[in-house]
Image (cartoon, rainbow, N blue to C red; front, side, top):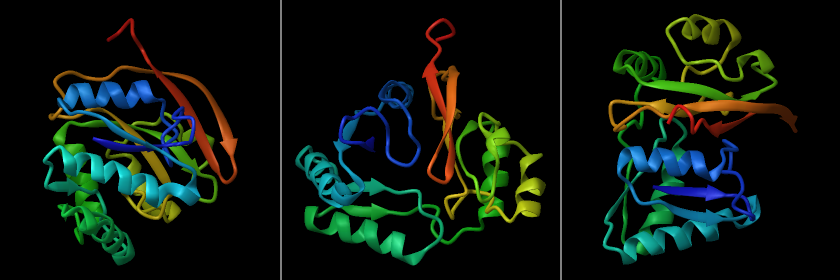
Length: 190
């Protein structure tokens, strides 16, 4: 499980999650963690080093979650190619409405941890993705899967986890044009 963090490895890029949350997710999935530390300007180099590390361990394929935007798919392929890795895009080109409905039907749980203020206000932080969100997203012009960066989530349960992940909010803030929710693993419930 490759995750890119800020230079100090205190927060994941884009989602702003603490390392212990991603460690807990990887544990529940039975995956080894590989992290890269970077600024936005050094992201590609750090990601390339992470890919080199997994390739050296015999990994041959890397799964990405891109759905839309050809440039994202091309970037994944371009980054993997020098390491002789195959970029796999299982969601590519599918309907984001259908994918959202499939996520809800799967019984998985995800909470909104960042919300772009242009689309969603701070009241969306910590909200669970559910069927009631879909008509609201449509009304607000938000892609159901947040593909234009309208929101990011943290997955707390999925049929792929060996047990749910319990998180506790511990603050929120507005950073540039996004609302962000800070969360910690709730050790008492875990």
